[in-house]
Length: 284
Image 1 (cartoon, rainbow, N blue to C red):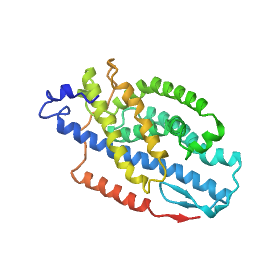
Image 2: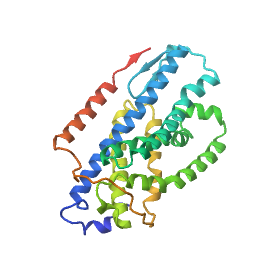
Image 3: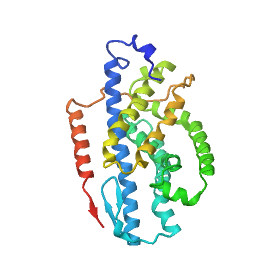
Image 4: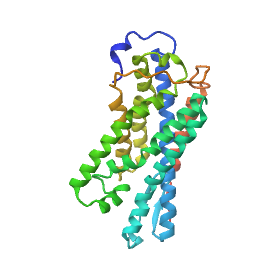
């Protein structure tokens, strides 16, 4: 999966060197984490507005919503479907719209394309991965999913259908992320393409998933981690595909990954600040 058999032949310098690939993975990891936090922020903000509209008491933080025991809310089916089910649906619709914007960008720089690629990937798959995460967990979208399909067997069958659809779309995302390459050296053969995909997607997904676990504190809800875990399914499916793609058109780049050495520090500080701000709760 990570092309270990080719790692001994890595050049000492250039885009295919170990150091450059590690730097690329680190940059993409930051982008994945910030994109995931932004999507969760949008989902929480939408849910907050709906809960305020219905007059339900809750405790709000940037990345989580906690329901208060004294809320005494009488939930109707429509309320459950709207509060817990509409967010992922809207995110997926917004992700499709973002894909159309990306197509119009054409020869944009690889950095904004990478950010928008991660964000659109997360948003488009918000609904299908929410269905997978909600198959067993009675949290988040799972609340609406349980009310919609009461039988575990039918939920399982439908989830298998979703997995088949995700596997079918994985090749599209493979090509989609290849278009974020900043040099043609990553695109001239299948091994280099898979090496780039591992560096830009698989490794950042794994590392980002670990970091994002810290944002799940106080670990009372495992719906979000399971949702993020489901996102990697498409990458794991496609990495073994032996097909070579025609080289997509990419814009010339200075081939620098981080614009300056301080950028890593700035990204790290921003993540730490986001974590501290995220643990602050406001009661409504």
